[in-house]
Length: 407
Ligand code: SF4
Image 1 (cartoon, rainbow, N blue to C red):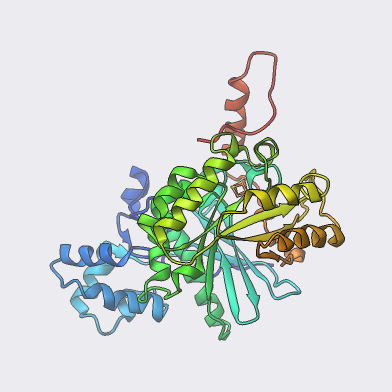
Image 2: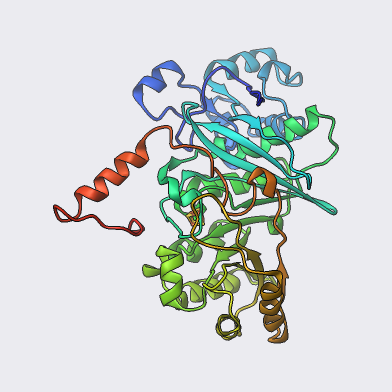
């Protein structure tokens, strides 16, 4: 039986990046600004706006992120008057986490209640030798409807606020600390539910808090944004943040990729890889792009595909992560044999492309890639509305199958 955790304040987290209520009713209930996930410069401006010195931001961030404190009253080096003022106009609210049983391999998964509490996303902690990677969500559901992804099947229900994004890591860390775990979170990957680059501002704010020494203090290289290929945002990324980039490629030709990742119809492979090269040039360091390639039997796992992929990536500074497909209920795809997977990897390695084989983690709690929220239902019924709109949009008497057009 799961139990609610990490309820820091009485009110549900607000939906906008700033933390203000998204609708007037919510605003009437709670107009306090949520300071969780607010980047340092903005927090300094917030304090200046209160007639305080900007260094108050430093004080507050240390309490929030270093000490994990969510109540202003406990911040004893801040004057009583200011603490009382903060409690009136601001809050520190993380979404509520509910744990799944820990997987046999130590992988942890939490259901994360967002919005008014009726919507769910998931966060997964993957412990490995010497590091612990937290995979977080950026949206409720996903509009992109990739053919092999459980999340895409539930449709899109909205963006997470930056407080909800940062709150996943903040609450998970508090949870681990409460259990007496000495393990910290060493890496953050935006590979949970949603397309992070379609929630760009909130994700950029969250990334800045993760990388800030006064925030989570995680190296920018260890914060990774994973995208299905939103080209305009990849071109903009380096000017906003120095986090790392992973691209979900999954196919080496447009015909196949458009079937697996419908966004490819809008941003084909050449355009996508050009944007990756531009990102590398803008960063100017020795970073490489991570290429994610999910192997599905009989779909994209043959040696001819490996040959095509090696040719495609020949002049891109990259490393490839091969991920054997994680089956989920109702999925049409199958995981290939390890013999096939190894043959694919060997071909890429022989072509000089650094290629890692990602072992599946948390299988027994459906925490693996593409399985998130495989069992969470669309509680807001937006999916039904979305499908109804799609049906209305086609000719009377006909239905259409396939993916929603990417925005
Ligand atoms: S793989 Fe990623 S981008 Fe594609 S539908 Fe799933 S969550 Fe969205």
